[in-house]
Length: 187
Image (cartoon, rainbow, N blue to C red; front, side):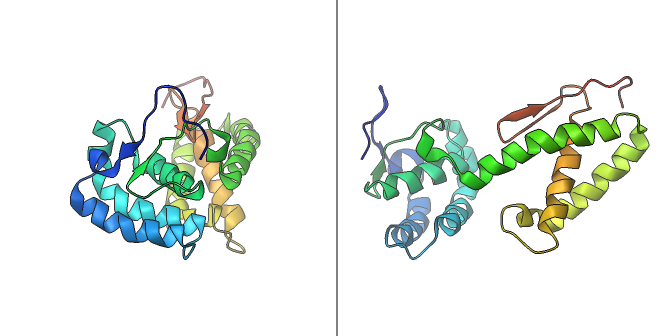
């Protein structure tokens, strides 16, 4: 197990979650520990269990996504299920190659879409945003789980929607990135 960051200690599951959540979580963690679940499947399963407890976790300054990733890393490095040491989100072991690739591609694609949208009227942008939201609602998972004929469309709809949202006052935050584009007239 890597040395803990200064000022951290092992946390007990019971410090974070009610007993019923822990009872639902342990079988998923056991499957992860015995490698019956892939890392992607484990994260999805952990989020399915943790999401109902989002408010409880957020009161303690933790999101379900952060806890799921931390638990996966903890078990990968030989930790026990009952307690874990939080990892910093900046820890290199925390990175997800697919997510990093998506961020890199969005850094390129969003400004290109902004450039092509800059002279369009707001009504047209709203129509395009509605179309993108509807497509992503149905096929958004294709961005992370490749589906022939759908993944590229889903990615472009995501980039388009971020480009459009970047034009509203204050811009948009997504995956730790901020996109903001000044526009001549606000909506």
